Image (cartoon, rainbow, N blue to C red; front, top):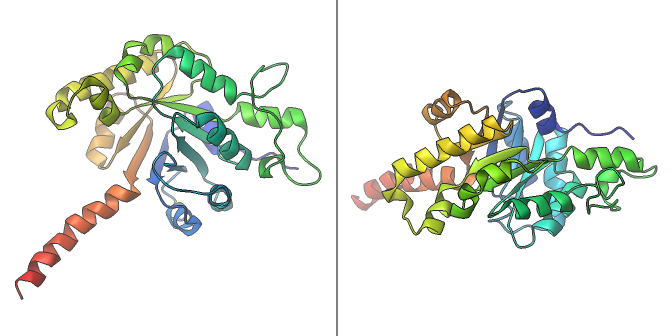
Length: 265
């Protein structure tokens, strides 16, 4: 069996930039339509927000593999171990974890997604799923190497996580981090709209600290101006746009203007 290449890991190891976009839908054709533009290295499926089935996850990864792009799944905190292991066994190349507060929580999460081998001493076994291939199955140590290559990304989105960020960065196995202003604001008792400058300063601290520890910061943005701002801070990994925000912008913008025209008839 040919061992699949982890597109995101390859980019990270080669110090290459990456561009992704956020997908809420489980329709594989949407991923294909995104991929054929040639503008994206991988997609992020926000499983934290969206309903999905396990066959959905398999078909989404198949669509990505067909077009040579990578795949990331964002999982919620409470059932992160189960969903992450199932997604990776189906072929997802990266997991974006949310809501961690301490280095110990991060350490436990990395342990759960590390191979259960003598070398790694993790908790992820050899599940009989599509990633091990079909008869003949991939060799166990080759499979362990594939699991080891899974890109592990973490949202830094709680006050406690920011307070503990230096210690979090010292945990082996973290590949990427991303600041989450909405959850951070809630943890502070803030409304984000009233603390925009504070949030920018905290995000810049996260970016600078991550870079100093050799961890790749990843940033979400909707415009080229914002991407340029992040690039000037040393960011090389961008998540451009969000399926739900794109639709809402059109529905409220252009469609709203047409609603006004129609109401004048």
